[in-house]
Amino acid sequence: MFDFGNANEGQQLAISTVDGPVLITAGPGTGKTFTLVQRAIYLIQECGVTPEQILMATFTEKAAKELITRITNELADRGISANIRNMSRT
Ligand SMILES: Nc1ncnc2c1ncn2[C@@H]1O[C@H](COP(=O)(O)OP(=O)(O)OP(=O)(O)O)[C@@H](O)[C@H]1O
Image (cartoon, rainbow, N blue to C red):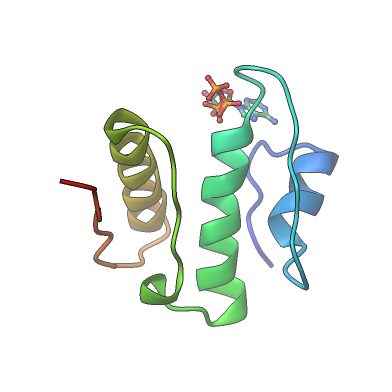
């Protein structure tokens, strides 16, 4: 059973809906990044998707680094080792 942590009902739905696209709209600081990170973890842990099969795009280097940190930490907490890389525009 996947550990959704603090995720609320809507977040849990966004995290675990893997059959087709999901659009998340929410205000600042409401947990969009949290939900996105958990969604990646869910795909890896529950759906057999490898980290190499997941591409995440964001607008700034800072946001990309934040995502990498959060995903790496979350995977480590769950005992999963993976190489998460940044593919930035140079
Ligand atoms: N359901 C929840 N219960 C408690 N805390 C939560 C929940 N969802 C997210 N959080 C926490 O709220 C904080 C803000 O979440 P997050 O950074 O994901 O928001 P965001 O919408 O991506 O923010 P921003 O608009 O600034 O990019 C984080 O500390 C996150 O762990």
